[in-house]
Image (cartoon, rainbow, N blue to C red; front, side, top):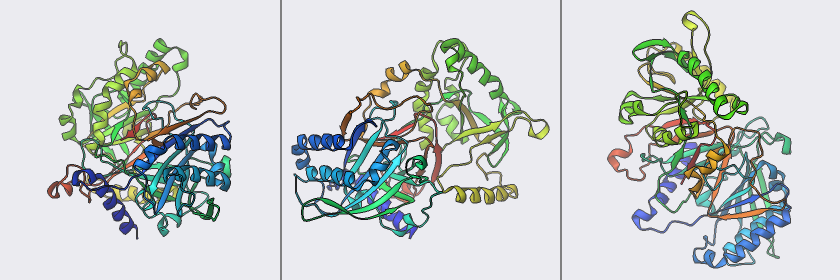
Length: 505
């Protein structure tokens, strides 16, 4: 069943991506974000949505959603977890949404609804702060929520397991493979007692024109197919500050790197970092003061040899103590080059631990082995089995780190409020934005009044504090691909958990 549903999803997505190319009319799906202050009342949210939809009614009728098979994906920030379980609020929300979309019709067809809770809504301007409220994608249920009622998504629901949603969208820039981005949902244990919150529900219109709940079930996972109405590629921003040029892996096994080559000499893998990280602390303290002395996240790219040469990574600017450029400036300069590594098949790993030791254990680095999203106990079992397979294998290509490949060490840059606001990326509005929430404890809510509601038409997005999981699919041709090249690419998975990373179209 898994392969049948999966193949159907991507065939449908591929057709939509090529709709413009072949001149056919793709089913319309619409996007809407409600940026809402946590202090806002439910009635104020419904009032704001109703007013907005009424004022936009002419535009909506010019391109109305299909008259049958309605569906919606509604993602809420954690502040509004219980609102998704409030039948009265959800009924009013769906009525305001779909009556306006259908020219104010009193009687609505049945609705399929997916509702879930994320760590936050992505800003409609990149690098901005996550927002609170609701982000909604609505239109044809068949197109938006493929396989919503398939048994697969309900089988493993448990209070101890984290649910997720996976977005099927356009290929990365420079690639032709359809992209699936999996976003783990928020931990809602303190909101409703559940590890995570994801529901599939059916709604019907009664004789009075009110939406009533027919059935509602918890889900463990669901795919959301994005009909973006364009053949633009998915762009990515992974804001990392390069610490070193690419270093050749000399020795390593599984997710452990033992030795790398630096300027022609074999050295313990952590030796260079042990020198550079204190320099970063000193430079930050000198430039920004003691408030910048928090922990530093370190990542590394695992890069095939041919990519190092093709991307001219040896020429990339890296951190230099005493440089006049800020960390944010250097990171933004490197954004294009680093983001292109994803479409080149390079994996990104956070460094979990390393340094110290002696003998054969001197200077080891442990990389985060997680490259795809799985339920916690399933992931542990697979890692346990894989570690034994790699230990007994004579094939050096096994494992996450391969001798002969390269590592490029990077850190999360220090972001000042001024650097974020002055970035040109903030001026870039996107239709779909999926991101990794910034790593700080300060209030990241939008600047709204106590009863503030901002309606952003044409935008849909969410963030996760856990990270995003990317998967490219090789068996379906897509943008710019022909029959000869479509099958030439292999599947690729990686985890991107760098704060302020975004994928957008």
